Image (cartoon, rainbow, N blue to C red):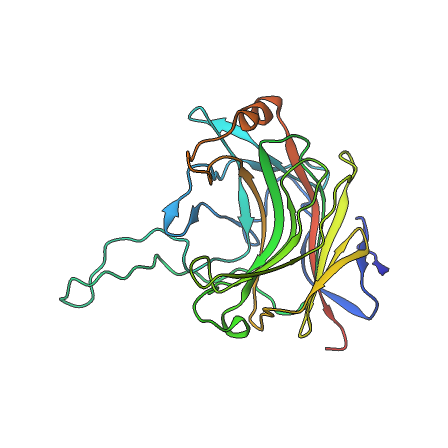
Length: 275
């Protein structure tokens, strides 16, 4: 790995080779750049009960601060994205011509930033308590629209932390999230220092996905390689809503009332400068 210095900020740790920065956010200032990020509020045509657009702020020290808080007496958190999944927006009643034909997709949106291949890196300090989780990942806008991952893309989970100090295995999903879903996974670790920032990255090229934690390789996946531009997400989610009861856990309430946070120092995307 090699250092890539960004003036006034912590350097990136990049794989060997020549790289050019093509997109990034250092989270400077006091206001989130809404030209780069939008909030994900819906999933699979439904408004998610625990996703809010009020749980991220900039602290003035070049960090995006994600919090878990109570709204309407329920813990909620936020997800940021640079693009949109075609399945997410809620469906509204429509007709085609004079026929009562319902189009079962919501409003389609253009991505603010989507990119193919390169090195994607996030420097962050993980949440300190149980009850919610954090993630840095990539997704295709049309994942599952075909059976060919090269054509319709994949989900690439660069970092998921479900428990304090622990990073789940890196996943690649393709085929959507139903009967045709396929998954490959590798790596993962625990014992990460809770009060320190860590760098999580993925090198995505035609050979697949190579994952890195703090500059050390943590596995490679050569399956389900997308050849489609994909967008970036930094997300947090309250534990419990995806279980059968669809309700937050007691630990989620504890984390919200304690004011736990997940901090993101920067997100950067690099392309090889030689093409």
